[in-house]
Image (cartoon, rainbow, N blue to C red; front, side):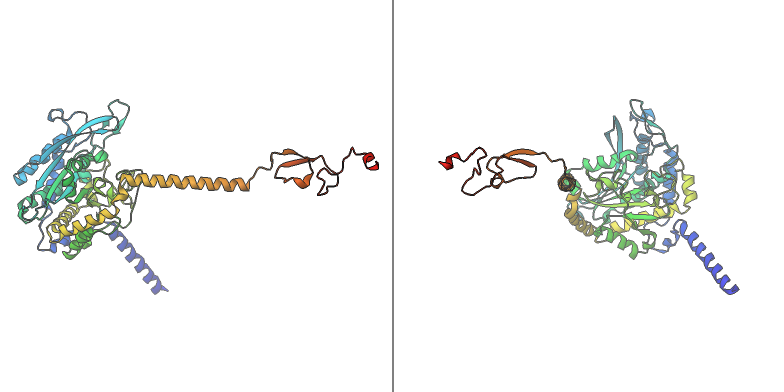
Length: 463
């Protein structure tokens, strides 16, 4: 008995140990065994995040005025990013301003675009990849113009996870691709989106600011958001895609497959974001990828904490969440995930390896061809067809149910029709509800439709 009890206790202890070890953040340090890494150390990513947050804790979007003099946090952050890119690469980021209506107000914002061109002989058609992340946050309170309420009350947190970590990744990647542009087979636009915290306005303005031909030449739009959680997800689509298989295949082949994965389940919230009028929004697209979905290939890179909507203390899988809360600070990020910088390095490494690998452009083009087979499903016409089909279905169902109920619960109080049977009932065809008064109750003979005459005394017959 003691031996059995000892075995049971050992099994329980081992199970608890495995459970506890599985709850922590992934250990990315073993990835450094790859001697051919493009990014040799995570120090550069940590340095960029520290510098960005130290200079731009308040990057609040949605302010009525937008000029350097008024202390606008979002604008100052855009200027900082543009200058930082010039310091690191010798080329300044281009600030592209825009205006956008949000409910009852009009706000000014700006994207920072940093373009890396491939050699013309490698890319004669001008194909491009977009890698983007929003840089703004909701640090301070934003009041509506009429003073009736607030768009948000302010977190007073610098937004390390949402979305400083992603900005740091992009800054490091910009430096790498600028130095290695000669090896590229596609152009790359790094876009630091403004007004991302409220309605993904920066991504929308950038994509639809391209010409029709330029939009057609976008091979893939990668979005980095809310990095630093305990699990690194790469999302491509609800169905298998060639570009997704290619990226995951590169990660697996080069030894990074164990550090990234595709989301295990599809979660949708029809009230959250609409993809061109249709309510299709997996939680993995609760970011700028929703602007591109159905129009080009997407790659949404995020952590488990991106699966949050109206959840503050936990993410969609029950894990602790700090993004979008008052706890979204650099100190909290380091405490929750001490290896966050290694995760940022792996994110950049997988994306860089995929883009630089031969066959990437072809995989993306194949995916784009397949998008055409179901792209109509996310079009406005599909919404009209779907709505019309539903309306017709409801109408047919209503008609059938009405007939069924009328037959089952027919009114017994039938209206009566009083009729006179002048020649007797043999010459009438009664219907439901008919009541006849037979004024010829005598014997009816076929050759005498009048029957017996009640006033005939028979005198005429005697004569």
